[in-house]
Amino acid sequence: MRRTRTGRLFVPPSPGEASRLTELLRRETVGGALLIGAAVVALVWANTPWRESYTALGALTVGPSALHLDLPLSAWAADGLLAIFFFVAGLELKREFVAGDLREPSRALLPVAAAVGGMVVPAALYAVINHADPEALAGWAVPVATDIAFALAVLAVIGRGLPVALRTFLLTLAVVDDLIAITIIAVVYTDTLAVGPLLLALIPIALFGALVQRRVRSPWLLLPLALLAWALVHASGVHATVAGVLLGFTVPVIRRSPGDGPGLAEHFEHRWRPISAGVAVPVFAFFAAGVTVVGAGFASTLADPVTVGVVVGLVAGKAIGVTGATWLVQRFTRAQLDESLGRLDVLGLALLGGIGFTVSLLVGELAFGGGTAADDHVKIGVVAASVLAAALATLVLRLSARRRPAHPNGEGAREA
Image 1 (cartoon, rainbow, N blue to C red):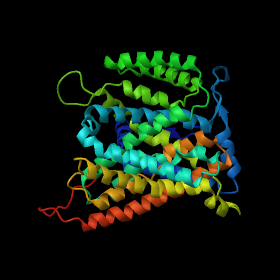
Image 2 (tube, rainbow, N blue to C red):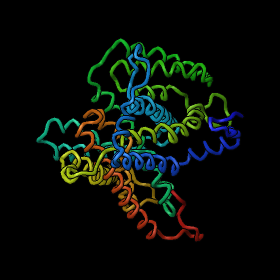
Image 3 (cartoon, rainbow, N blue to C red):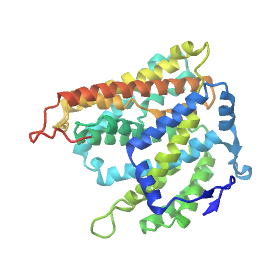
Image 4 (spheres, rainbow, N blue to C red):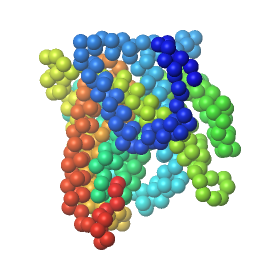
C-alpha cells in the first residue's frame, strides 16, 4: 500500500479482484461496449469547443528518436497497441485453421465463400461510386473488413433465441475476413519496403517461434523478442501490426501431452484478450474515431463519394456479398448451411458483417493519411455504416428469433 499525492491511502486490487476484472474484459459484450464508449467519447470531444485539445493529444509525440520511434500517440495506438489486437487475431486464426471449423474444408466452404463475397462486393461498390476520382479509389479496401469484436458483441446482446451455429458461422467468416484484410494491409498499403529490416525481423520471430514450440511462456524471454520483431517490421515500411499476426501464427495450438486443458495458443489468447479488448482496441478507437462533424460542411461530407462509398459498401455490399455467395455455393455445390439456420439468419449475419470499425478505420488512415479530409470522411462513413448495420442486423435477427419455432422441450433455441 502507498499514499497518493492527495494523501489518500491507495490499496491495490486483490488477486481475486484483478481476476474478476480480466474475466469481465474477456466477455464480448464488455469489449464491444468499451469500443463503442471510446468512440463516442472521441466523437463528443472532437465536436466541443475544446476539440483542439483532442487533436493536440493525438499529435503528442513520444518515444526514442534515436530508434526513429518518436511517434504521435495516435500512431502508437494504430501501430503499437493494435499489434496486440492482431496478435490475438493471429492466435484465433491459427486455432481455427488447426483445430476449428477451417480445419475441415467441407465445413469451412460456406463461411469462407461468404467472407470472400462480403469483401469483393463492398470493394466493387466503393470503386463504382468513386471511379471518377483516382485519389479516392485508394480507399477501396476500407469497406471490406468486419470488426470481430464489435460484431460478436452485438450478436451476444441480441442473440437470445438464436442458434449457436449463427455465432460459429459469423466467427469463421470474420476470421477469414481478417486474414484477407491483413494480407491487403501488408501488400497494398506498404508504400516503401526496406528489405533489410524486414529480413532481420525474421530472426526474433523465428526465436519467438522456437521458444513457444518448446512451450516456453516466460514474458522475460518472449516480450523482448516480440518488441524487437515489431520495431523491425515497423522500420521495414510494412505496417507494424503484421508482426503481431506473424508472432501469433508461431504459437502451437495442440497440446504436447495428452489430456484435457488448453493449448499454448488458447493460453496466450486467454491472457492477452483482456488487454486487447480492454486497452488496445478502445484506445485505438478513441484516437481514430474523433472527427469534427459540426459546422456548415457536414451535409457535404455526408454526400461526399468517399463517405457514400464506405456506407454503401459496408451496409449494402456486405449484405449482397455474403448472402449472394452463400446462395451460390449452396446452389452449385453440396455444401449446406447448418439445419438450424434460415435465410433471415444469413441476412442478419451479413448485416453484422457491415460493422467494420477497427480495421476499416485503420485502412482509412493507411489509404489517405491521418488527419486528411478524405480520412475524416472515411471515419464518418465507418461510424455511420457500423451503427446502421448493427441496427438493421438487430431488427432482422430479432424477427428471425420471433419466427423461430419453439424447441420441443419448450426451451427455445440455444443462444448465439
